[in-house]
Length: 257
Length: 186
Image (cartoon, rainbow over all chains, first blue to last red; front, top):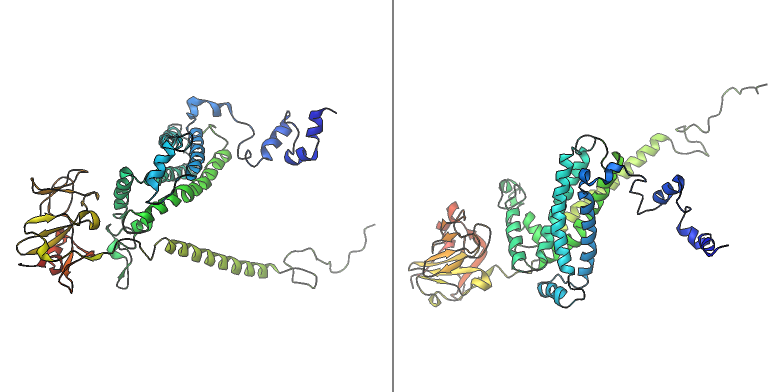
């Protein structure tokens, strides 16, 4: 028996790979279907699915950038401390002291690229009419993903704790306090009373919950760090699963309308 | 050929039949129990979500206190915008002939910190150019309303006490409130 055959017939190999070498349709199907990472993909793809002039590949590029951001982000987390004492200097150290020295830049440029690519993806979907029934729900899922992408940018922006960061978030959260009903300076806040106790004040509106206080300080930095690294990526991950699944169920990417 | 059919055929496999000694639950009983279970699960989930929402609003803030003393009125010169507390407390202290008032250093446009320009006798915000008179009233740029004033009073030891948790906005007519201005003739 050849060495190759004795390996592929061994119990270890067969416990990992539950199908033969996929050189026939049955095994090709099995190779995808029985794999947790691959089974969200279709077994076959239309030719139109790989035509850049149809798809612009923008959805795929966006997903790739999300993965890039996740990986570079996790690497950054080994050196960055989200406290007012360390944040600014840790970002500088990531450039000047830490090996490779471009992880922060990769992450930042990747973020800009991802925001651009989601907008182009949205434009492409609109231009190809891929929001029409039965795909309207997936369009809405995509809009929520767009908002989550922008929120990821917003929360990540604060983390370097430089002048740009602090003032951008000051302006952004000051806009939040003007939101109707949930912002203490917005219209409708004075209507929400429980008896004679105001429910929406500077100490209890959406801005207070966002900042963890009344000023952009240590609590805000920690909160935005958790939102940026854990909460929003988890939500985006779940919605991306729904988004890709819907494309599958509607007949695959770049299918006829 | 066919075996004789018995008079009353047994139906042990029929679902939903009344419980027999060996058999299962009636459908109605199962659904009643399931409904109770789902109701309990939903109530618990709702309670958890409400608790998580409340969790996001902190009870304790590690921020500087809103009430503080800033010295005696004699330490402030008449007609001068005093900036000694600008960095630490984010206020300007202005003493006039009749008394003292305290302005917030937060521009009413989008929240930057204006600068006091002595030569031009105005507050000017570096972010978008909002301009305010020495009284705090806006007169140029995108600021929609005057700077806010904070409560001023006398503490027991004769020092001026500022309370930033009480603010007064001119456009709401609140500057005429006695707490917005500390009368002191020196």
